[in-house]
Image 1 (tube, rainbow, N blue to C red):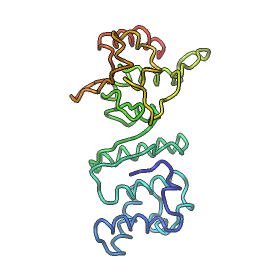
Image 2: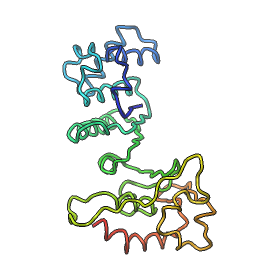
Image 3: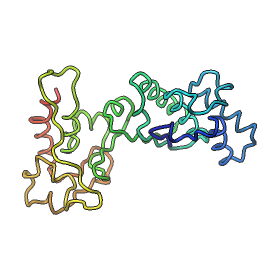
Image 4: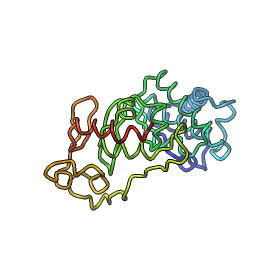
Length: 247
């Protein structure tokens, strides 16, 4: 697991090498020397300069980007099949963010580790993801390849997310369109579709199903949404109303 803020995730009382090595020895039974050697190896792999010296440093002696690299090293020290990255670049500047994302992509290709990236940053998704699952109020509302979800989204919440993003090439006098309303309370969810109190398209669903029946994401693979709008209606709304806003 890669946490959002490595400064709080890493213990300030132990060296980077001890924390990485302890993770390794707990799972493999490695000796102290083996654990230290493995820590140096992992710091080398994630691009920490002078790893045999920096292995004895404490987290506060690392920069933000280096701490996140150390967190990645700790997460991968036991060669996991799955790595969960929870907002791994939120606290980093744009340059360091790009370096960390490139590092994760390189390590994923080198080690064959699957990565689940949890993020609110659509730019990070576009840069790194192969497949995307959009979640709202703890529920999956859209699933597809990164191209399907970002270029031809089908769910009203995904439309709202994309419409609220500024465009570098867009006109400066066009205001952003935030998703109206506020997210629901997770302990007092609305009946029916959790997005229906904020949805601009529920009146196009016959029978008021949006406020009475919760739509489910189809279990089959491929592009799918948890929405009562028909696929034809989704495509029509996107092409004629949403896409012109996105440019």
